[in-house]
Length: 422
Image (cartoon, rainbow, N blue to C red; front, side, top):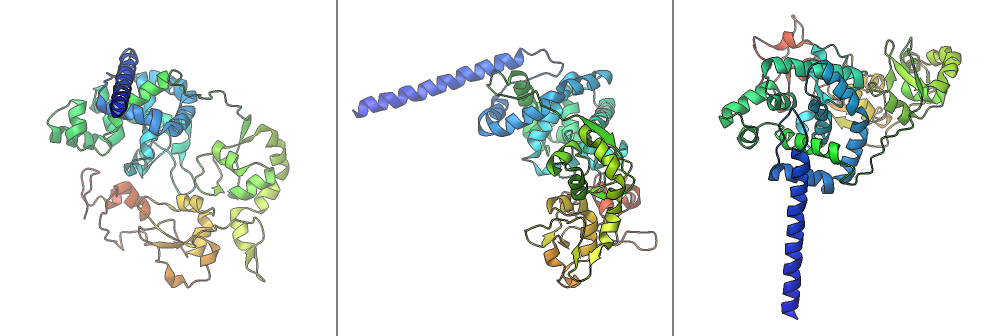
């Protein structure tokens, strides 16, 4: 009996092993059969990444494919216009996959994971209320401009992919460490901060081309609501705006991802369902009568509660400690409030906050003495300078944003944009 069990287990092991070998051979054949300008490789590292996306993270992969595939043709067309390889269209898919498992992306945003400094350099608006890195068209144009700039420095396609995912300086440092330009030498010895961009890029190319064979039921037909573009004349709270027009707030934010806080600001396109356009025209004056500035003053003295619009308060702890990469807009969005409300609760005169600062993020904390929060650091000026010690994860752009100054004002004679801890 024991002998029969042993033989059964041995047979099962070899069966599973043989199936795995056969499956790998099929994947390799499909992958290397693609006609691509970017050279594709298949090894154990790539096989492991594909396996994770196929099995361990299948639901996540399904969602990534559903978000990416409807945009693939648009990305390819824009890359073609710029004279760049169409395979670069898989960069957003790879970057979104990596974003969830890598904290190196803390200062990047949007489907193209555009760094803050790159966004500012190419004219995107990024502040506590607006982040145009979430605008598909504008972020794609910026990403392509950035890739074109990288191409002027590095013509090798894999070096462009690595530089976009890590930075040019990180690529050069990796080449020095590994004493090699082979991508797998860079992966193994280069200490790239986002080295998995190499195998995950290949894995994403495979899955985007063979998702049907791998039995992903990707819904590419979305019943998109017809929308129209409007512009506001004053700041308006999102909750109040959506309530007046009877629009689901979650749907509205999905259609308008550039608004990272809870306030709609003038001079930016806002998408609303076409069927709501006439209602907006009728209610526009009423909407402005409860603008953000008005709401801040409209308080019932008897019970200290805001009359309109009713801003929902977080049910969680009333305090939050600022982390590296935080801005007021993201904190406000996280706790279901507005930037203006955060500034009022914490007596902030500007949008600048610092790591470790304790903020009141709920009305529950307002009654506590103001001494419980640290004051916002004053903007550095020519008359008053602030000394700051560089911490892990800092960038010049993030420090400049924190202290409401420009990068040039804080470079202190630094020639490059590289800074070091301490």
